[in-house]
Length: 154
Image (cartoon, rainbow, N blue to C red; front, top):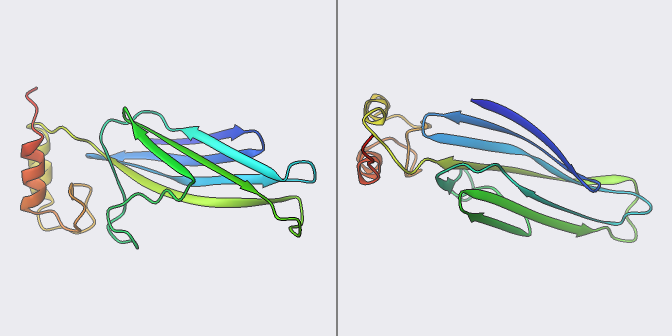
């Protein structure tokens, strides 16, 4: 599933895509604060549609396995991720202007069934796979143990 969303809040804006592959849903995009002569302070608060699972991020990054959400506040409650970000422009900054903030996070499902095990085993030993459930960079026994530990009967 692939989805693209654009939202406007005050002068700020947020654009992102949502793509689900296997057990992983990836949300990536850009939030922008916009400033002009009359508005030197801008804020954005956005709640993403609920996605059931745990929060994660790319394995290859400065913080492996962690979401890239560099905002003032990030909450993950009841499968909803909410971001908050505010800035006040300095007096020497020319207007109009905008400040972009890029973000990326994963939501990895937290329940598995008989349909999932063959898919995980087919990716065994692969790097950069959606079946790397523990985000250590390779599909291996730890991922199988995680899937079995979060088993649900259909």
